[in-house]
Length: 285
Image (cartoon, rainbow, N blue to C red):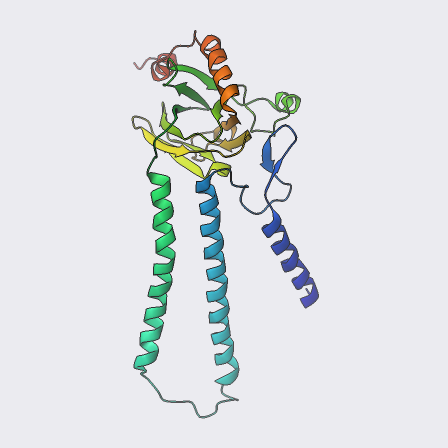
């Protein structure tokens, strides 16, 4: 491959990477662009900080790599046997050793400060406006709203035909889904009824394991209305790739109306999902 072709490929990659992001369709559905390489467009402050941290590390890696490459080229061309037939016999240089020890320490400190800040932002849950509980099952999700009479419902992936008819991406649309209000802090409690699952929405910057017998929690505050998608991100069995996550973010007025509808729609569903799922399993001999 010629240098010109290599340059064109690298240029195309950088342009695609730097300009890639989600597409907001007319109906508010957020999904990736064709051939997208970068992150989903952030919908929360946490995800924006994750992208900024990633971009900063990428720039730092490029600078360090170019610096090391420059040193290697200098050594190759200036100190080879032809250019330097009488090599130096220097075996020790205190100043140089101090420099190559101090600079990596400074780099690690520069990385650590925003890293710890981001970890704190993700881990410490602010005062929440509502709570949603997600329960992973093989292979679908069950959701509860403890703040609203503790109603619950199952969320199962649509078939390809149903997804196309409803306007959802293949393998990401669900028959029911979470609805939350925009610009509100949502506390998410996550567990599982059988094996380890993982609840993840890339645009929210949220990924948390659902572990049987354990309650994990995280939070998100979405800044734009629309429909967002995610998937189980833990290998949980043969249908692991077929238990998507779908979240609709709406105004407070639409959320209040949905809550009233959901109370009636899901009133007959058994509240204790763990008991319900366990009762469906075959009895042990």
